[in-house]
Amino acid sequence: MAGQLPPPPPPQWVLDLTSTTTPSKPKSGSIPDPPGFTSTTALTTKQSKSSSKAITPRKQPSPDEMDTLKLKKAWELALAPAKQLPMNAIGMYMSGNSLQIFSIMMVFMLFKGPITAVLNIQSTFQRLETETNRTQMLGVKAAFVGCNLLALALGLWKVNGMGLLPTTRSDWLAWETAREPLERAYYVPS
Image (cartoon, rainbow, N blue to C red; front, side):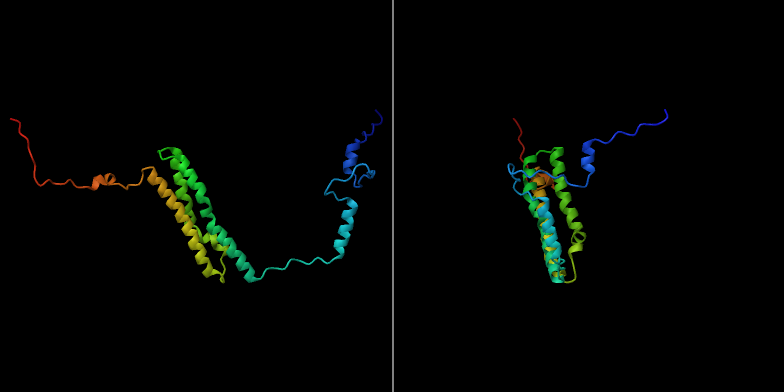
């Protein structure tokens, strides 16, 4: 074997994919372009027109505008627990009042979420609070705490429905003292 054969040429589809030139398609009048289609020639003319115009960068928002945007975002965060209340209420209703693992875990998660949210309130609103909107953020934080208290009230309603809250007199019988009667009546059979 004095000489090796050269490798076979690549298939046509590889050449088509690697070529940088666009294939020229015959412009036939029988098939129109689909709606919304822009040809490459129209795109190049639009690009040349747009490059001739000066592109102005977006104006940076002023500090007042940033405070307004941050306050809007803070209100969205504050009212988010209230938006979850209908879903949680339907979930609590559908889980039933019996003591099962599913209903107990649902109630646990219903209590855990608002409590951790209230404990982490400073870190929740830290990135949105500035020196100029600090007083307005107090109302936002109060609304956030109020919405989480509503979720806790929903959890208390569920726990009461399950019979786990000691709300009746019979739940406190261990601390009741026996009443001493004023007199006793005895029956002696004759």
